[in-house]
Amino acid sequence: MKEHGVEFIQGLLLAFACMVILMPAFLRFLRWLGMGKQIREDGPGTHLVKQGTPTMGGVLIVAVVLGVSYVFSAYDASTYSPLFVLALVGALGAVDDYLNARTGIGIRGRQKILWQVIVAVVVAVYIQNHFDFNGVRVPFIGDVQTAATVTIPFIGYHLGIGAVAFIVLAIIAIVGASNGVNLTDGLDGLAGGTLVFAFISYLIIALLNQPAQPNLTMVNAIVVGAILGFLWFNVHPAQVFMGDSGSLSLGGMLAVVALITGQVLILPLIGIIFVLEVASDFIQVASYKIRHKRVFRMAPLHHHFELGGWDEEKITMRFWIVGALAGMLGVTLFVASIPKP
Image 1 (spheres, rainbow, N blue to C red):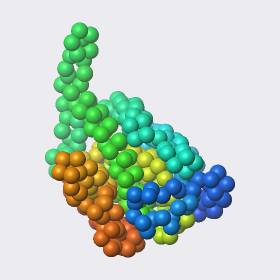
Image 2: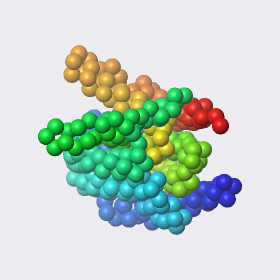
Image 3: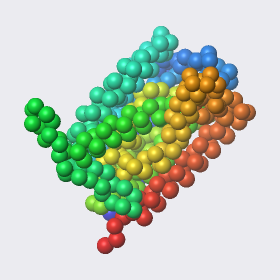
Image 4: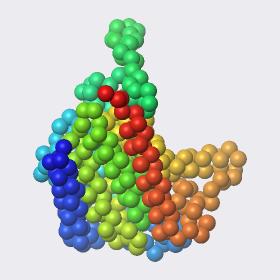
């Protein structure tokens, strides 16, 4: 375990160094491509100064995570799925970033959701089959699962109830987390910082899991290092934005990590900021359609505080604090639920 601990730190530091060293050249490349951010006119007026800031920085995060994971041979059944989601959803996000920057119109929301669902279905089925999940792990209770099956009429195919429940939950978690992080990515450093605390939390969980998951822990460490390197250029005032290539892919990857550790039910706690951002957006839309009144000054939630007079840095730091505390609570809940020998 001690040797592994040194390797985890090495992976984190190497990913950080790669981001810091490569980012200046990558920024020049993005400017050459004309990848300047198109700021929405219906957003906060203070954001107009960010017009033209390079976006699609998530592509470098994805490349560094995949590359450093290869260097440390952090590939096994526990890491194939997270890296698969990172790459495929990252590709979707990169196309969306490119179209947004060049035309001002990206991929339609329904088309993005469809792609996310397809990827989620493939990954959920793979995880269920490989790890034989037939239910979920509930804090303080343990594994709640069933091997009972139902027979599909006419074709006679037997389908496990627990397996189906896990697959459905997995699809919801992957798509939900992906879009939750995407909604959070609205202020300099906001999504990146909250993701760091979330991945650190699951790094600890993977390390303490029974049995331990060293390769998954390593990949989490590499992701943390890559995001920290990105934040070096993304904190206010941002020199580069993550874009959909980063937020969509990292959100989906976080959910897959939670699924493979068996701790997906504490994901809403560890990712409480992402949950609140999605909830605020949903409430705002529903309230306006039903009551023709808005609950928040603007959704998602960080814009509500921004229009309330909070400085961008204050909102980001306070959301980081909430994310860090939520991560600690999530890890505490996991540790308290570990069966005693």
